[in-house]
Image (cartoon, rainbow, N blue to C red; front, side, top):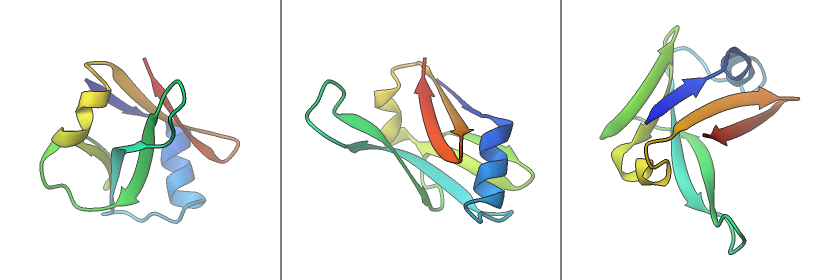
Length: 91
């Protein structure tokens, strides 16, 4: 399991979303619908309790808790920003 955050995403979270150095951003799995892929990702400011993976850059950090990594099943999660929108890519 690998967590990658693009430079565009780092910039977007700081400049457009107003996150500041020292803040922690939790990525979690959530139920979104009953369609072909019923689960997606959510984000929130939070402090790690049992982090499985964490990526830090200049004191801003993204992480996923152990209880949420089941969804990735050893795949890589890339967090990106495209046209001001946060995009999650699993591969």
